[in-house]
Image (cartoon, rainbow, N blue to C red; front, side):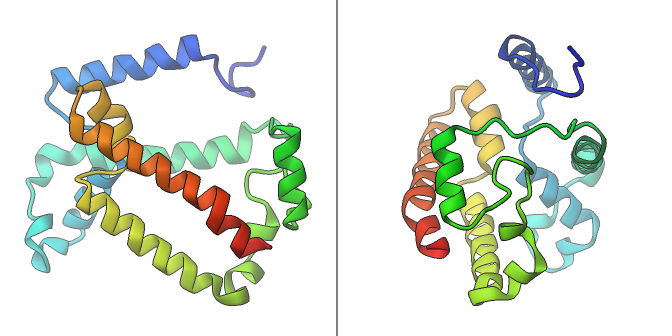
Length: 186
């Protein structure tokens, strides 16, 4: 078994995530991608436009390191560690995706029917992308954090607002997958 070419089992990855969260909690830090992006925006000068971005950047340098590491790690994983193996999707999911026109469903993490430049300009998809980005950004700000922050950090701290936010995120995801996605690709 090559540990870099296949997903790690839950009994390894779960405790590793728990150890990271324990370290963050003990050091008084919070985890979440939206807080990392807030730090990056602040470092790039957004604090001149909004008080929301006026934070002590020196105490948040680890956020910038985290987001840069995430980008580099994602690139390395997708470029060199994917092993060119099919994605383990349920047969029913593959059939549904192929019915929507995803001919390479299960073969790649970025199907051309969804991620090509052609798709971006087709049927106003760019507008959907911009609107979706706005709603995600607004939702993360309104909810006081993003999905990773609430689901990993907030729930591990037993915060009721995080539980409510996670229920909302999952409900919105179900709504998207079962109702909006079929409308966009039927």
